[in-house]
Length: 282
Length: 227
Image (tube, rainbow over all chains, first blue to last red):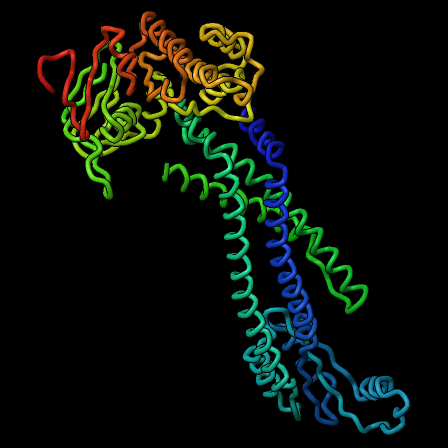
């Protein structure tokens, strides 16, 4: 292992330009992947915020006894899809409407707005089918005049989410494949640059596992350095966009670490494939 | 020690490089392998050090059997630690000194680090290059580079030294020095198979000579008629 590490460091020292080029190539291919990831993360966040606003509002008939509404609230809160349920009295509805309308607040008079039950759903239960199911159940109470939940809006939101997920998956796979191919090619260059050394190692009786080890370490280190550089570039790009264009969010620290580790894994796999192919060929 | 039984090597594009060769080389023997270019000498040597597998027939080298079914890679590594190979073009690593080139062969085969410097110095002394350990290959003459390659081939005290045209790139004086070195190594008990075109070299000694033509053995001084 000590020798393998020394050979790896020697490879970096003997061909600094090739090593730097490999790391930069890995960094840029992962940077492209990182930028795409950033777009995906921000689209997902935006959709999640929009989803959180999905709510069902059930309008209660005038003169409904408070006890009946209270019993219904208890029932509804026990639905598995429901996160939060509250009764908005006519007075509360009026003051909320006045607050939201600002200078037009005087268009409403007392007694104009009905009381309502406001229902928020749990994450994972905000798809059109779940929302409709809850709305239908709420609508069965005799004192409920009308139930509204913006059916078209919920359906459209989910269509956007499905398309965004599919596009994200396809583009993400394409970017990842390009990164793997580019990284494999740079490591193949490193293997070819040391073709003579490999031939001599095998000639004097080094095992294939021994021949592979320095290249695997080299691929791993290049992957880590390339991944780290890509993370830095992505963070800089994100900061610039946030500062000059629009506020965006960055990866969670755990995701960022996973990204760098993915770079290392790609470096490792790229090396293993390149060296194994070479050893099979010679 | 080395036994070839009807060994052939056929390449898809160029046909038979070695064609039905049967041969036995005994422990400690010195054998010249001769014949014109393309006669199959180098391919035969590659078969012996397991760089190539036979298309048909079977070789047995110090207990390792090579056949068309192949040889496990661990077995290849194990055998190669028991033999040495030198080539016409030396095959040294240009960015390492003579000492480092020899040490490399020990380092990559699990030799304890503590014993390497002493053994390398002893080998460089044996080939007459004790004072040139810190020289890079480009700073050495062809003969000196070949002697470094021989020192590298001897790191594991091999039972067999395979030399493929080792004097092909050398002048007369360097050829004499390298050849004498190979004779000394043989005298110490290591078998040597040396492929060469140099008929003067062959005539100067009484060693066994195997002549090849078109992939076949056409003459063997150890036997009355071709094998």
